[in-house]
Length: 377
Image (cartoon, rainbow, N blue to C red; front, side, top):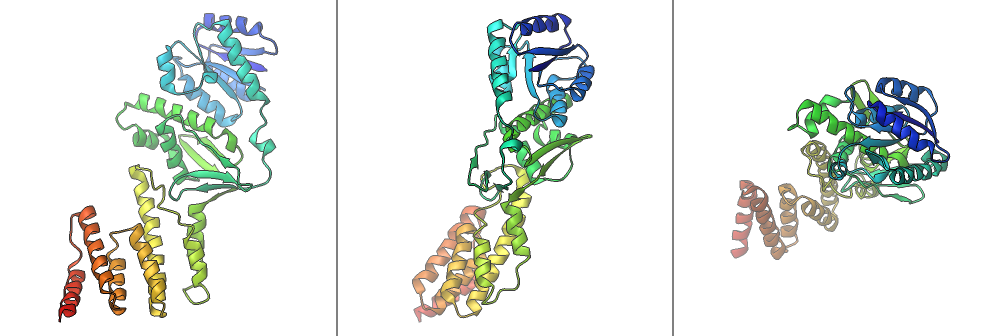
């Protein structure tokens, strides 16, 4: 195991080198007070693990780790810090990643053992067959491979999760670091916001290790870009199929039904991030437009039962869809199902008052009142 040490304190470097020298199968290849010199060496030479101080005058250790992992994603990082245990917990990284200064021999030995075990683990590239990664963004995020092997993603912080989802939403695009800092940490001063950003990027890189070769997070100049390879997103798959559909006919309606099933729920349905809303509404409106077209086609094709089924699905998903409620009221009226007309209007009325504190549109209320008067004649 080839190790590089980086710390701005010479005494700390010497002590750590002395302690590591006592552990079998550990070779301290180099040590550096200058972090930039250490970075250049690591990028040039074969290195397995870096013991890295966090607080250095030239560069934050977490930022340096993020830069190293950009070029060498399989590199293992062990942070050395003088922070107390509570501060370590605040970073929400596991024990493998941190040693507390001054480092005790037993604690260091345990860390090295964990690093050695990690080095023995096969990489994702060596174990993965040629198969696709499937990612769902409708309703909630989940991932699995072609062989149905699900992937459990556990985010260490809520901000890391939000940052990943934002980059995933903007996949393939260069997102400036300044924009990310302002988006996620608007209340922080610039330096602190950037520190939080680098920490979150580090979390994401570690979390994505099992997806190496499928999901890559790159640092390009002053931006990040998340790229996917051999990955299928349900959002892209669904929208692509919708855009390629021919007009609705007897021959195509079943294909419409199969494709619409892929819309399992709203885009990132449980996420409450404000930046999700635009994409969520865009996809929602696309689903609503296609579902309405299908319902109208069923209605004009003399299939009222299927039209009722489709309009009811629209109302179930989006209770404020006045057009769907109104169409159902008319369909029920045509079949002389008076109870259902009354019930549908009440449903619309309750939905509008609950969500918008408004009554149904005047033309719907006028139609309902006129219809109701005729039933009394």
